[in-house]
Image 1 (cartoon, rainbow, N blue to C red):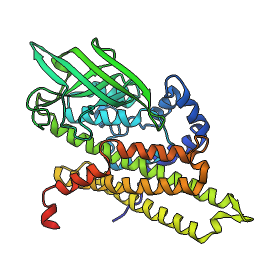
Image 2: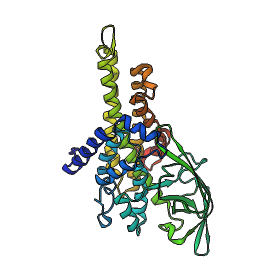
Image 3: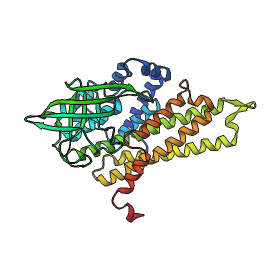
Length: 379
């Protein structure tokens, strides 16, 4: 099998890498993080100009109809540059819109960079179970009324529209009875509390108090949102895996450079065989993670839901293990400097730690992988 990028994919990768290396260096990123907004309008405009916001959007809505493999190329470079813009949140939201259908106008706005999205899926009691939903959606004539709270909504305060999962029927943990809604920012009854996360991103806790929505806010069919929720979250996991590989690549490179320049007993510490062995182990973990991220991207668009779930969970679990190993080794090899905010290595490790906790950690995905049909028979 040929794992080389196509010319178009390589072009996207090269364009993004040039932009990151020139206009999104570590010092510039830190200025963005410390700003009141926490994001950069100029950076977002550049991503749109480069075609990144249009990449996964269907051609009918002005996009390039890119696959998850195409998106892997983009997420890898954004991870390498530790880009904190709301790209992941918007692309995950666009996936929900595409699966729902009949949202062409909004997808056109996403493609042009005009619209940013966020996905309010998690609740304080749910941990990683996206079907554990206490937020309710009650039908009231020709409208829906939302009540409940969502936590850690990535870039929830920067989004123009927010995809919200709510329960319209069934028990709190049932897959049946889940509905998805599109809620415009600033809707009456919605309270947004924004904060900065450990890795420099922005997130928000959102409360819905008798939020009235028109029937047109419903994405897909009432009570049948689980399939879209499951498929879109797997797509998001595949994107996160690709981003993590980009972060690990940059962290490995920074650690290797440090070993070449930091001297002890008159020689670079990279001359010590014990440290060379540790770098070799880091490289092996990175290569295994990259292979799994590629497999996850290939299967993220699969029509076979069982195969998609099995592959994506296997990738997230393996990449979580690799991220922890590489992050911990890099911090130790940098010494005390490895945990200071003045050094990019600390920020790489923080981002890897948050990716591990987003849309299911290693333990969650190991359990999900083992629960798939045929696992026990194969074992």
